Image 1 (spheres, rainbow, N blue to C red):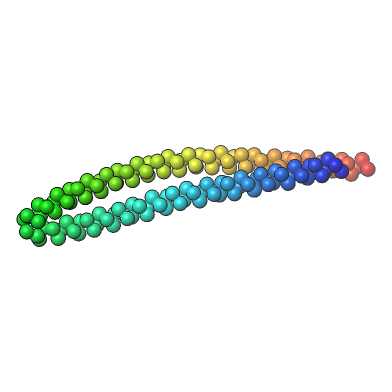
Image 2: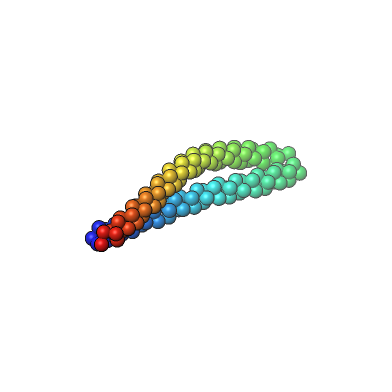
Length: 139
């Protein structure tokens, strides 16, 4: 009887571990989705900024020549800043991609561990069933 209760508490502990790991894997997956969503939002914002910039560039051509020269310098600065920002974003995307790959790998490892734990639980349950049958026939 004591062995059965001990086995039952171990099974409950195993099930708790499995639930914890499943929850952990789910949270990792949501984190990866959030990172991807944020990257796409940043790209969308910069594409919109590029369109706005292009629109303003065409209106500059209608100004007088002195003003055009000043605006051209500003445009070069803005373009340089925009290019620098795009380069930074590309670096961040690469970092996020690398992190995403790492998280996917960890997710796969955790999935394998979870499957292993579930298989162990099933085997324990089979052994317990056999032990219970043997105890039943003994009594």
